[in-house]
Length: 214
Image (cartoon, rainbow, N blue to C red; front, side, top):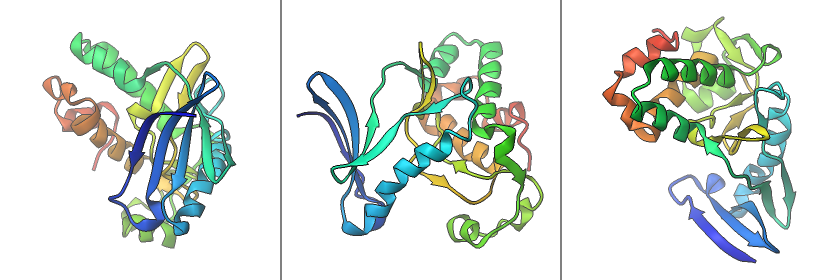
């Protein structure tokens, strides 16, 4: 087995520190995710359950999570090639195609929302407060029942077989306000993944395009 890529997240709490590897064996590539410490084993196993749950979040023509299984003490995910949402948006920014950017953002926001059956009015839970703090101000707003907080533009891949969610480490099985998820992913997009968009829009303008207020 040949290791093509290796990343170690050593800046997290022990239960969330993982190794991510892309390996090649008999001409086939796959992605391995392994816990660094024993206390992180459940986090690795959650990759498999996240994959199964996310298959219920999206219509098949909207997106599909990459298949993932647990074997040999690792979460083993398929490896695919394609064009990421990040690359698509970077190209639109280079072309200064504002109409294309706005259409792209609308499609991206729909992806974050998922299908209607995964949406409900937000009810603040202890789990939400443990992760994000007081959420009472969001009470009653639209929320996702099962949430993929990791749905950034670098983790969405498009190829001839459709649109794929490539990574889904940070998923939550409690309600999270949709606009909260959108805001976090737009922040990541604006400041880190596609900073070229700053030449065309302010962050406030980006929020307005995506109908996020407050």
